[in-house]
Length: 132
Image 1 (tube, one colour):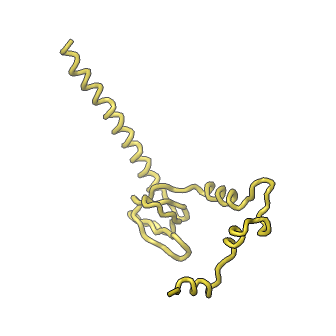
Image 2 (tube, rainbow, N blue to C red):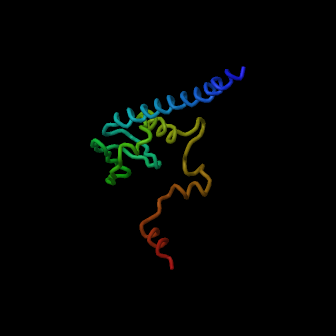
Image 3 (cartoon, rainbow, N blue to C red):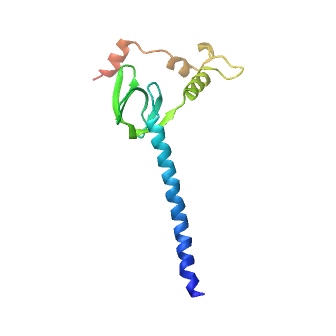
């Protein structure tokens, strides 16, 4: 009986470790395929959480437009996720569409919400930032 205990203990400890390594390897291959499949125009999220649109590609780097006319260069390995175009369109329609039975006229908004939708003028911004 004691002769079977040691091999059984090895099997019990090594099988989960082997399965875990296989799962990690599959995930790493999936991420590598995703990073290699990035193309210009794709919307991506980096490992640091930055959202951007791919504008140019090299073998090792990707140029991301993070704001209008603001382009930064990243390693391909920094891309964590490619956002499908379907999600972006769905988010925009759900954000812009009012809930059923409601309207978004300024008269029906609470006073705080009505003032929040008014843009601040350049003079007001300058005055607010240069208070002494």
